[in-house]
Image (cartoon, rainbow, N blue to C red; front, side, top):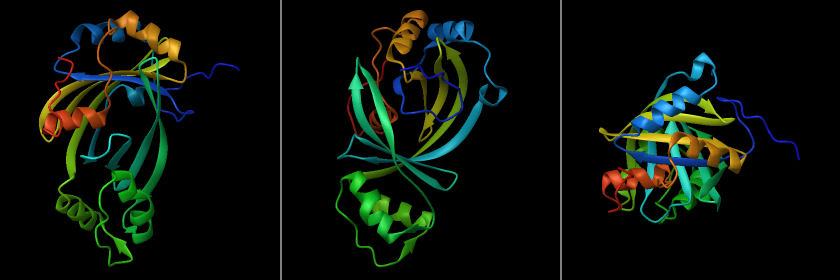
Length: 213
């Protein structure tokens, strides 16, 4: 099968991903920037404000809300330490009772709240999340710098998780060997691979594990 060329900022078939979080990946960031081919100006630097819905009982469904739209991805598999995720659902607010019952709350793996309306606004949904002791609505601000190394889509990001600053670095592609080569080239071999769900849980105290540095 022909190898799929990665195009930064565009949708592809499900990718494998390495990502880590810590206080500083300065040396790896410098190497990533030096090794990167030119990338489109639209991904030089991007900023976004998102809400992640974190569930104490679930690590396989990643739910975030950005620009009034809900996006849920589900964990598929880990191969050679790299994770693969697939889209599970996309929705907009107001969101219907049926979608909440059949897709959203089952993804959180928590007890279903009483739903007595046909649809719910964003504020009403967040209120339901805050009322559930096993859920947390976490504010995440991202400042991301995009690169392309060994035909893998890379980024370094400054991330504020409820105001706490951490740094993330990643490489993703449909091709596992390209990611592994990139990790070796930028000096990230042996660094823990964790996703946003796990990192946010560590920062807000839902997990007692530490970040990479």
